[in-house]
Length: 167
Image 1: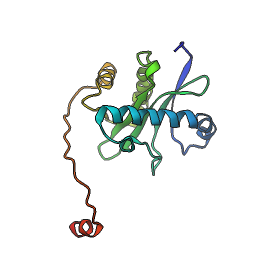
Image 2: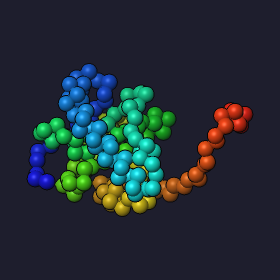
Image 3: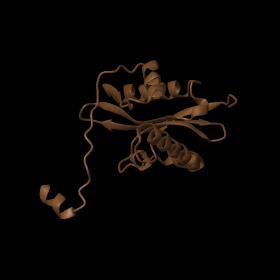
């Protein structure tokens, strides 16, 4: 991909002056979200729906890298935890053709500035153990490995009555 100019913005969809730009990038953003879900599902052997990004119930900030043609080059969706004063990077994606070109680094610079200005104490991210590219990118911008995550797959309960009794 040829080098293009791009900008990094941090916004929320509930802010009125963001809506005109969001309308211009919506299709590109939807494509990027789909590519993100596909990439992670292949890596983790989970259904794409597991990674599908839904519109949040409450407005949450997010960071976008957009080129001059309003194509989304990358995104970081954020979630704030006011109890622990932690800002979570819930979903991070950079299009493969612009990886290694500083897009993620500039988005994280903007996210860190937002976190500092808003008074957060921590910036936290979870990366899948097979996602070496993301792990290296996170380390490159200053994340330190502090936690190890575990999961137990739970088989779904087919009988709603049984599930309601257990609750």
